[in-house]
Image 1: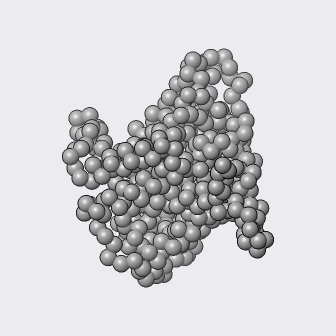
Image 2 (image 1 turned 30 degrees about the vertical axis):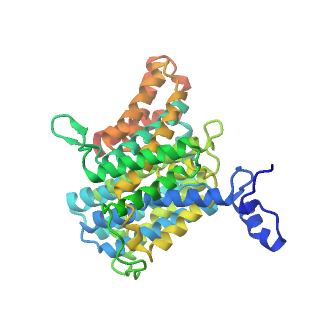
Image 3 (image 1 turned 120 degrees about the horizontal axis):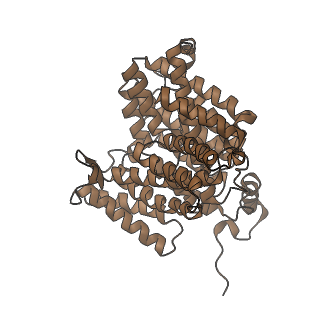
Length: 453
């Protein structure tokens, strides 16, 4: 008996097949061996995995004096803009939104720590986006990426897997802070933690049974279970009015002249450094997970980096901190997302979220934690491809992997790997095998740790 075809594969009149043919031409669905249904599920999964930023970003940036409602709108629109560009132009299943670590740097270090007005900090974000764009269109970006050896690229993916799983464990409070040991096991009797554990079990069961959308369905089931037992409040409304963007819109452009001070130049370069390596790590990790890397190289890399930089510039103008590629995109890739259609669907969800903000509130950290933990398992598989028998590869790779969760920074992990790799290769007498840019990065990273960290 012939298997039933999915709706997009069913024969039918030409006018019914035309939209499918159009999507295939734009996103190359058949070439990537995927379907419309699969891409839609992947897009929804990615959105659910990163929807928390719609609530967290206004809370963090609101502490600087920014209007939280305006930041909510800026967050959603910046995410939709960057993700749509990534999907339509770069054609990758990678979503973008204001970065969680970068917004903390913006709020707690730049504004509340140094005392720089949030308007000027937004101008700095815009300036870093412009520099990122120039870096993306130049050959320097390619040289930097080519200078990163394959073991470090693999370690980056695995390290981000541990990092994102660590975030999930923290969100679920399975892992908590401990004064004696820094971290420890949380209270497993806590109802919210039990909900997250339930979500992990359900998600793993779905995946073990071969359910392609297992992560997506795990999120949905966990959210429903949370509402049934009263851990997640039922939304008070379905549709809400979109707040005004006026309090933050355009402040980055107006305050751009304030960027040209020594203090702000250091801030801008720090934003650029962290964004570039966060983006690089995310692109490499997801490309490896999806099987896009060819001889260690990422096709259409310029477009991917330019999409990221344009999103940062657009987000700054709208009124939010640095917009960057999200590692949570790996959740969509894990359920089969392989083309820019995944990103396009995610972007549409962000726009829809503007009108349904009460519903976004049910996607709590405990609901997304299982997805992050399970995705970490998938990404850790890259560890098996690293040459652990050669210490000049093994040690930089190990430092890269372990530093990401322990320093809570993707950029720090990559930087430490780039610091130790050329050093050990020189000691080993294999200095000729290091890309010339690798030595430049060694001194750049050294300066970063001395003066910027």
